[in-house]
Length: 114
Length: 116
Image 1: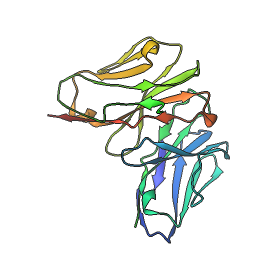
Image 2: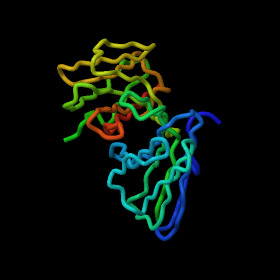
Image 3: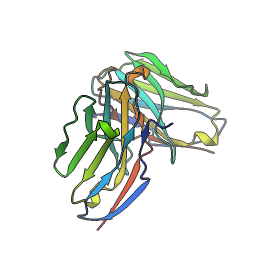
C-alpha cells in the first residue's frame, strides 16, 4: 500500500449506531488531518494531529471522537450521528505541521446517516 | 467573509478549449501559501501546485499554468487544450500563519466538465 488509505470507502449507519473510520498513511508523515466534505460547502477541517498530539479541534460536535494511536494511524469514532452528518470524510497527512506542507489525501469514506 | 473564493461553481467546455479557473483569496499575513488541488470522481484530492507569497512568478507545467497576482489577490489556474480526463472538481486553498495548526482553508471548488 502506498499513500493514504481509508476504510471503509462507504458506510451507511443508523443514528443509534457506533462505527469507526480508519485512516492509514504509508508516507512516514508526522501530521494527520480529518476533513468533512459536504455538498456545496468548502472542505471543513475537523481535527489536526501532530506527532500523535491533537493540535486543533474546530468546534466539532462530541459525537465525533478522533484517536491517533501512532503517527501512521488515525481513527474517527462516530456515535449517535445525525442525518446532516452525511458527507465525505477525508483523511490527509503531511510531513510536518508547517505552512508550506503539501497535504496528501486519502480517497475518503462516503458516510450516509439514516 | 470567505477567505478563498472560487466564484465559478461549474464550468463546461468542449475538448481542446482553454479554460481558466479563478481563485481570489483574503489574508492579512505577509507570509502565506496558495495551493491548487484536483478531486477526480474517485474522491481523493491530488496536489497540483504550491506557491508562496514571495514568489509571483507564473508557472507552467505541461498544459497547466498558474497566474499569481498579489495586487489583485488572485491565483488563477488555466488548462490549455482541455481533455476529458481534466473533468474534476478543482480546489484553491490558502495556508496562512494566522491559522493554528497550519490548516488549509479551501474554496468551495469549481466543477469542470470537459466533453468530447
